[in-house]
Length: 452
Image (spheres, rainbow, N blue to C red):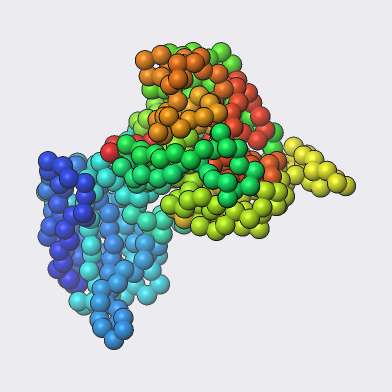
């Protein structure tokens, strides 16, 4: 079999967080078989383990100058071998790639392309992590991708990402000072509940790109199939799970709360999150409300939705229409002068929407506003200014809040399909009892997966 060398190239490790030994890549060689067109990339890894990703660049002319430009993540996402995952051994490794499967113009001229292999430190992994949660899933087999366009099939084109896999987005929050809450510029603001205060989170984290769906719930908790109010068989799989209480998500399988499993303790093994950890090897949890708000805002502050557009109205908001399902854009039905709930059997044009039906925020996270409220870790308190973003549970007495009071309700964020626009704002806060199962409350997950 004849092989033609295309280019000998070199790629250094990405700029990563400082640590004792940073993984490094050297000696990257890309070649293509003349008959099968199969591309083989070899590289040498030092100071493993590392998560390894791939890009392929070709010559492009920009402003009259020839530069290297990526052919795009969609073109290389089907690469296989020691790529898109944690690679554990030093030495030479191999990646194979079939450009004809994903890149229409896949004939690479000699010297016209190069492979760029990047090694990511285990505590600063790529922006996207995809975790298999199917019955066949194996622990610690998650895949990593440097950008959303690298996800095989596309974030919305591949149904697995809303049924049998979790897509997680990295949120770079560590040591970033930001303002939590709202000001009087936002109408319907509650001055006590939404008082502005400065917050600095101590860790980066991954957050679910979508709320957990009914299909995902069924995979993890088959003994209690998704109990959701909206059950239309044609679309229930990708609609968010709701009517699930805080306890069965994190604490127990019934309405009796056991403080033994309250944060910072790990979730109860019989809970949804406990079973998710057993299946994947990853410690997932609910977000703290500070984590939730930081991710929802996506770098945008007061009076803004998560894409940077303005908050316009307390009832019907044209900007929110683009970003989430709420009362005035299909969540409820106008009956005369009143809005009423649609039938449980309704399709996804009423009630909850299929997750991902609206535009994401500036960080690529969907459905943060509307669709379903989302449970958070914290005990609810009206005024949380003194906590500076800390989880409102006393680590030394998990049944109590940080103020020393006995805990009761848990925080929920984001508003839902039956709420007006003002209730879906990034700063809006509310709480519910840990045993409450409402048809407008669901959840999404977070994890560190080694991030610092």
